[in-house]
Amino acid sequence: MAVVLGTDLSTNRIILLATLAATLVVASVVTIAFVIMSPAHVRFAITDAYTQMPGGDTDTAGDRAVRLHLTVEANNTSGRAAVMYHSMLVDVSNSTGPHRVNWVRADVATPLPLFQPARKVTAVNASVALVGGAAAEAFAGNVTGDFSVTVSATARFKVGVAWTRLYDIKVTCAPVSFFSDDDEDGQSQAAAGRRVVDCSAAS
Image (cartoon, rainbow, N blue to C red):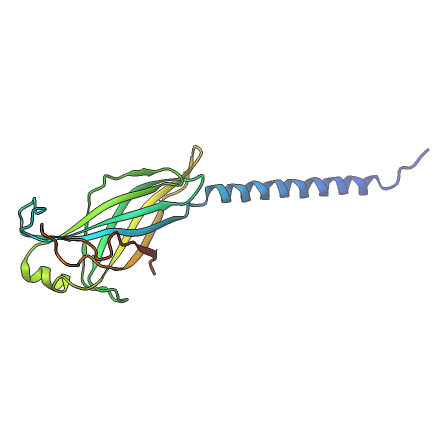
């Protein structure tokens, strides 16, 4: 009667190798899913910041308010992930220091939710109306100086047909200047033209 040696050992090796292979496959799938479903890298910046003074040709509201206008540019640098912005808050502060006490919330004119394809730049327009001479001057620093802007958003990211969970995004942009020499119609453009202020993650 022939005796086969090492049969149990060979079987154990096969089982071990199969287990290791299955583990590697699962790890690879998890890694691929993590890479694919990671949020897109969105870069924010403030552009086209200017002031609309009361009484000029652009004062269509007629409420004698000083208006601070700005555009939030969101640059989706991902080559595969789209973004759906569900909400966006824009706060303007009259201090660029770490302790921002005096701030006002801007009115966001761009309708939300807002869909952004991959590798696209999306513009969100916002404005602040400062009504009341003394209060407006106190906040605006007699219409001089630099400001900081905080953008808070909630967004989901889409790759293919799959959506991620809802993410919170918060960035700070500074210094933002709304003021320069007034032109004839009471609208003040940034002195350097279309000035771009990059934003960074808020602490």
